[in-house]
Image (cartoon, rainbow, N blue to C red; front, side, top):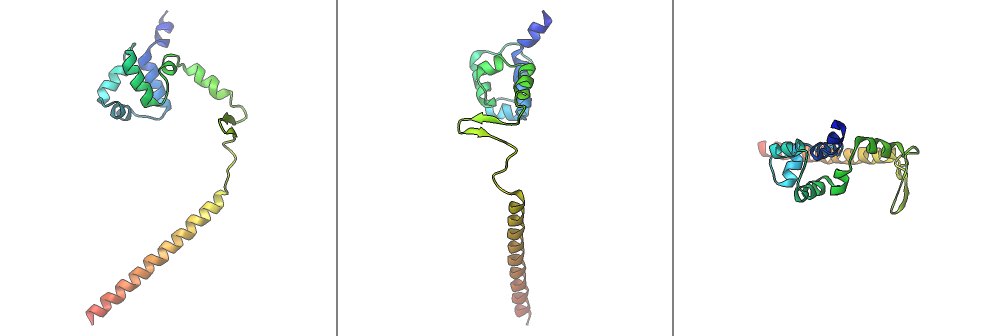
Length: 137
């Protein structure tokens, strides 16, 4: 009986989803336009009215039904089904381990850009020194 109550505790489900999304109570509170303490009270509540639940769901980027039906077991099962580290989206199959660019090329580009910025800074400093020397004479 106690397990059933725990599974239907909407506040705990909201808290768990917020944590999985990497969101702090303060952030959720800001999005809802309430205080952090109010979010804490909601997360400690067994029930949340439907209108507030809809606002919270929108802020968390899920549906109210997703909150109502949330369980840690379903999340674990969901991620365990990605045995090949790929999933299908609306554009086809996406493989997160396949880069569409060479990371070393990006690193070299960043290095070259840094080098150019340094050279411009050095030139500006040389001009400044020359101007100050001219003022002194």
